[in-house]
Length: 461
Ligand code: GLN
Image (tube, rainbow, N blue to C red; front, side):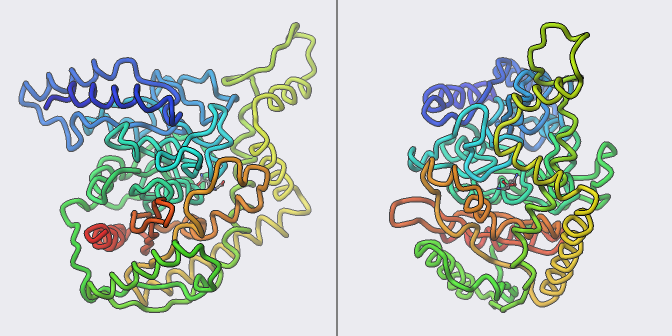
């Protein structure tokens, strides 16, 4: 088939299903033309790339030249970037056809996609349930096969939790693997983009396209990008797989517990050795995460002042306006409640007098957490855990209960804090027919080990 035919096929699926799901927020009107151009290059015998003609959806968090990049916020509702994020540019280089932009929680703050300016997204498995967040649009679009691949971002679980809730594969690579250039900043020391796709193989191929050093992001690693896709092996015989002792305190939904127990049994049957490891600082992962993430967010979001770009409140006479009033009204109208809550929390944590007690302290505990993980990875090749405590919850269930919503991130935030790679692979199903994922983590830059264990689980699920 031609790239044009594939693109047209997915366009018709988007047309038929997106009104029910609200996953896409805007579409690339030139997608067919872009596909034709790829077909023309293939006809000329050019080697277009590993993802030639593959239609992808991109989270609203990533800048796309000529396409809206709203970050799910009124604040950026009119923002059309003049350039592509490095991730997007590299996907295009690999031959991807960008189909459009995908819904998300506002500035990627949330776990249910209910904080979006574009309205909530529905879970394709049960339209009364959330798809997870913040990359809920990516997860729903991929799960309903509106595209062949999607890109999400993960600051504290936003790729892995929605992937688990929607039954797809989601990978957050090691911090520094993927350029953050052109990705709207939420918490810069935690943010990382990654694939949300249908298989471990697709994830590996996508990562090969987007990963690697970028002179535009000084935090990217110089390390060469391995050919993960060629080296995926489901033979995990003799591998040591860690279980975090402190995670085994119960309190999981029965279906999640069963899925997790089944995954351990399966890994054992396939010849892996299960070892218990201790990462006691994970107990503090959620509080440290919400300190670090809100602090960095309050600083990053200071740029939305209504002057240079983005939303500006209406003022009759700009020359006589009070500057405080200008910022106050613009930001008051442009940001939603969850974003405001986080800016206030973060500003408080960073204020003189509290900085040492909160932000600095969080940084110290974060270092201890990382050290404990590094010690644990001397005893095992990868760590397996649940992704969340329950399958997808109902729309509206947690929306007025931010603290319970934050607890959704109990198993996912520690990998971001430690900079480790992490992923979710579908493995179980609740009695009510909702998908449940299993989380895998490995040491820094050891994505291959994590992908192999995921592939092993995938091969029998
Ligand atoms: N749910 C988490 C939060 O609300 C994670 C978000 C993310 O990874 N972008 O901050």
